Image (cartoon, rainbow, N blue to C red):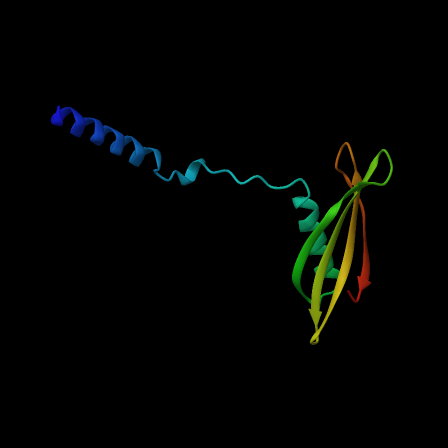
Amino acid sequence: MKKWLKRVALVILFLTTCSNIYTGSSIVHAQPPYAKWGKLAVEKTKEQYPKAEIIDYLHIGRKPKTVQITVEKFKLWLRENGKEYGVFVDVEFETKTEKFIKLSFQKTSR
C-alpha cells in the first residue's frame, strides 16, 4: 500500500511539474487594429515637429466619419525646448479597404 501511494504521489508531482513548463514560443501577442495607424501618427508627428521629442502616446478611439470613412484619433505628448504640449492626430482612412486618406494635427496645451 505504501509503494502504491508513493507511485501515485510521484505521478501527481510529475504531471503538475510538466504542466507548468514555460513554452514561450506558443505565446502570441496580437496587435490592436489601430496599431498601424498609431505608427503612422507617430512618424508623421516626428516630421511635423522635428525638434520635439515624443514622450507619451494615447489612442483615443475610432469613430466613423461617414459610411465610407473612419477616423482613428490619437493624442501625443511632446517636449521641445523644455516645454511640453499635446498634439491631437486624426488619421482618416477608407473603412472597407483601410486605404489612407489624410492626417491632421491640432496642437493643445493640455
